[in-house]
Structure formats: structure tokens, C-alpha cells
Amino acid sequence: HRAILRQKLEVELTRIAQEFDGVFGAQVIDLTDGTTIGVNAELVFPQGSAIKIPILLELFRRGDARSGLLKERRPMTDAVRTAGSGIIQYLGNGTSELALEDLAVLMIVLSDNTATNMLIDEVGGMEAVNRTMGELGLRQTKLQRKMIRPEASARGEENISTPAEAAALMVRLAKCELPVSAAGCRRMREILEIPKGGPVPQPVPGNIRIAFKPGGIEGVATVWALVELPDRPYVLTVMTNYGGAGDEAIREASAAAYDHFSRLARSTPY
Image (cartoon, rainbow, N blue to C red; front, side, top):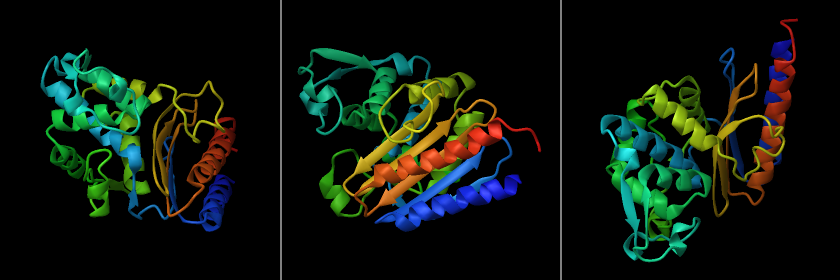
């Protein structure tokens, strides 16, 4: 019976992909039994701000190696300011300092681009992030430009991943099988669980924690999510390109996944 339910979820994700006016990819992983359901899961997609999760990981990896790093403060100045999303762009020149861990919160919760670019420099640059992704076997997940660099994007230096690789990273986060300490893994999840907007939480009851990061640039909508459904947690990654209604496709995929796993959470083996 459960095999038939899994097939229904795959059929629903396939329907969403077929009806989407662009390209749609998704990966769903059942953290209880390891079942994986994917649609176009190996395709490489631009990531928008979802690529900030690997930056968060690299920051906490370095925080374990260097005591006190996450508490070190950096000044907010015109020299580091970046346009786009976030609040730092509106702060005074040299009037504030923030700890690196607080910059990480701003990067994930408000998708602050200035905080993101500062943290890329702090962790040793894009090469350091990509090296860690490669060591985890995620060779299609690459940070190739800083935030708000249209000239780099035009050259094809886009931040990329696949639904399968993003899901694999979120599974590692769920199991704390990352190159960070247990405490660092817990703090990463806490930061990712801070409530934020996006289509993934919309079909999910508000009492269920979701560790996630959405992303979006023109024609692109993505999300990497760990849905901590009691008795049946799962990972959902969705990526869209060349479409104008990516958020709606993500919401539909989230609704389908939640419906599937909430049924399993309430069921007996039969």
C-alpha cells in the first residue's frame, strides 16, 4: 500500500513538472526509511539565495576550527555594502558592528546580500565553499559569484546545484553528518528554522518546524527544506527555471509532500 502512495506522490510531482511553464525539478527524501522520489532531480539549476546554505556550512566548519570566530565582529561600512535584499545596506557608514554569527542570521533570514558577501570573504572565498562541497561529493553544487553581480551572471558564472545534491546536503543536516560539531549542526538548524517567507511553509501547519532557505532570481525559484514533521520528517528540494510562477509550483510540491508524509505519520504498518 505504501508503495502505491509513493507512486501517487511521484505522479503528482510529475504533473506539476509537466504543467509548469518552464523547467521544474524536485527531490523528496523520507528520513524514516530513506525512500527517494525525484523529478528531473539531476538537472543543474541556478540557485538564487538557496546557495547561502553551503556558505553557512563553511562558516560553522571554520568556527569549529577557530575558537571564538563566530563571535568576532566586523564593521558595516560603505566599502562592504551590497545592493539587493537585506538591511545592512541602510545602516550608517561605520556606525555598527556585527558578529559573524549575526551576519549568518541576516544572510539566512533576511537573505541579506551584504552579509552574504562579507561571509564569503570571511570563509576564504568561493573556492573554500566549493572545496567543502566537493569533499561531500556534491560536485554540481558551486558558488561561482558573489551576490548582485549581474556581469558575472551574464558570463555564466552562476551559483548552481541540483535537486538531488541539495537534498543530500539537507539529509546530512538532519542527521548531523556534516564537517561541523554537533553543537554547530544544531545552531545551523536553529538559524534555518527561524520563520521566514516563502511557499514551502504555506501548506504546512505552523507548529511544524521547517529548516529551509528559498532562493529566487529572474525566472528562477528554488528552495532547500528539511520539514521536521513529528514521526515522519522529510527533505524537499524544488528548483524551477524559465518560468513565471515558480513559487506556486513550489507551494504545490510542498502541499503534495506534506499530504503524503502526514498520512504516513498517522498510520500503522498496515
